[in-house]
Amino acid sequence: MRKALLVALVGLVALGATGLAQALGTRDNPIIWVFPPSTRPQVIEETAKKIAEDISKATGLYIVPRVMPDYAALVEAFKSAEGNVMGVPTTDQYARISVATNFETHARLAAVRRGYSYYFTSIYALREKGFTSIQDLSGKVWIYNDEGSTSGYVIPKKVFELNGVTVGGVVKSGGHTNSMIALLEGQGDFCTAYGSPPDAPAWMKEKGVRWEWGDDPELMIWDRWNNDLYRPELRWACVDLRLAASKIPGYGTIEDLMRKVAVVAVIGPIPNDCIAFSPGFPKDLEDTLVAAIVAHIRSPEGKQLWSNPNFYEWTDVEEITDDYYRDYRTWVGLPNP
Image 1 (tube, rainbow, N blue to C red):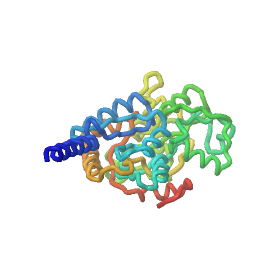
Image 2 (cartoon, helix red, strand yellow):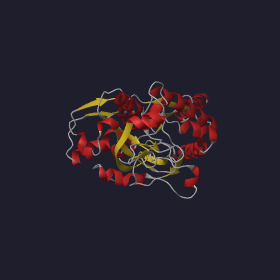
Image 3 (spheres, rainbow, N blue to C red):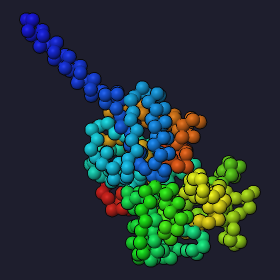
Image 4 (cartoon, rainbow, N blue to C red):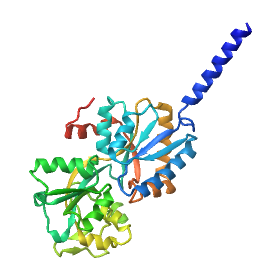
């Protein structure tokens, strides 16, 4: 009897220890939140850490943020996850992760930037080059951040192929902002990176006036008739990669960069990146985290973190399902469920 009781007690202790070890969101079994190194790695790391701390406080869940060394590493983090990984994959990363995990990885929130749930690739070059079309890029040196980047590499590469553009060389910068810096330093002839619509003044947006897909990518920024910036009282705000580069000392003000660097063309539109969860991630914890992230990004403190030009520039989120990316997967030749 005493032996049977001892065996039962040992079994209960073992079960309890196993349960504690398997409780996701504890120090012994933390949630791993992975981030791509899309801009300045140090800023990404510092901001991701602060966001993770805020979400941990709001949910009581223990979260470890990890900035991946490159895009491929983030994809592998999802593929090898054991129900414990959430992340911020780019559009192309998410599309490929979803296929590689038999569509068990799933998106819950899409980024919204200044009211837009899509973005695009911008092709940037020095104005002095005089490029006016994609065809002008043949034989020129292409700067991009990483082969896993949707806007930096995947989409422009496909468009170059479709248009018979063969570049004369490549420079891999490791980050979107790094690509602009490399362009300013003369390491290549043009760079590809994320694009953002010019931002109309608040009083115009209140009347429903804003940039729409198909408009001039430098609408109310660059006066093409006079080959100069619009006057300050007429000018819309530039919030694309030039703004991020202007935050780095030594490369000039945003006005300097708008005068130096042109948007040659834009490619898209592309559905925004997302918050996604790996296969097997507990649904109740997902719901808790999604609610906390929505509340965080809509708070003054959270919005300041998420919208940092050298972080991911998210100004809001919207709830989505995997269907949000069906057309993109089709466009790049990937299967759909």
